[in-house]
Image 1 (cartoon, rainbow, N blue to C red):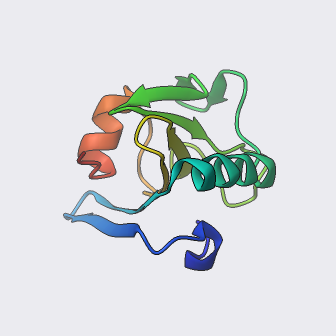
Image 2 (cartoon, helix red, strand yellow; image 1 turned 120 degrees about the vertical axis):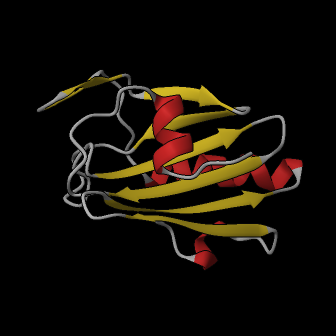
Length: 132
C-alpha cells in the first residue's frame, strides 16, 4: 500500500474490513483518494510508473484470473506477482482508477486460507468489503 504522503492529497478516505470466524479470518485495507482533473492525471501517471501491474491472465494453484476488471466506475489492476508480498489469492494488491470521478483506489487483501477467487464482484464485496 502506498503511504499517505504518496497520494499527495488531503481528500482521502480509508477503511478496514475484517472478518473473523473459527475457519475464516481475512482483512482488507482500502484507500480512495480524490483529485482535481490536473492532479488526477499526474497522480495516475505516477502510480502507473511506480507499480508493475499484471498484464496477462493470472494463473495460480487453484485457478486463473484476468489481470484487470471494472467495478463501480473504476478500472482495477492486480499488482504483479513479481512483488514478493503478492501471493494470489492470499495476499492481493489492487489499484483502481476512476477517470470520470478522478479517484484512485488501493486495496490490500490478506487471507492465508483463501483458495480461489471465483469472481471479482464476489471478492470485492464479500471479502474486501468494497462499498461504493
